[in-house]
Length: 141
Image (tube, rainbow, N blue to C red):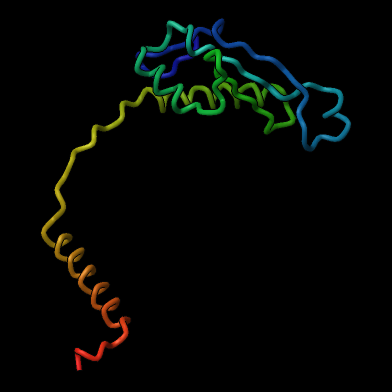
């Protein structure tokens, strides 16, 4: 059981890990040993997450979410399989923890009197500058 928050925990049977060959540094070891980890977590079918957390997780995951609703995290930062496995799990836990935080509702505010004055002063300055750019007409002499 992987504990995410006080209320949310995920069973290890819901997470599928597949080991693949990593690119990057490692010499001959890279060609022989599958050290990278591809972690898959089916967000759409899990019962461990509340509906609102699930929706926020889908939004946060972005490109990492497949069309089937499976979250795919690939970890290949380390040369060691165990460290990559832990890195992938940490990233999954971090993502779910961020999704579990309810967004703060936005309070609509009115612009202050000073900001309205600054805006109008800027508009007046711009208008004055543009007026000075115009060619002088003979009637104004």
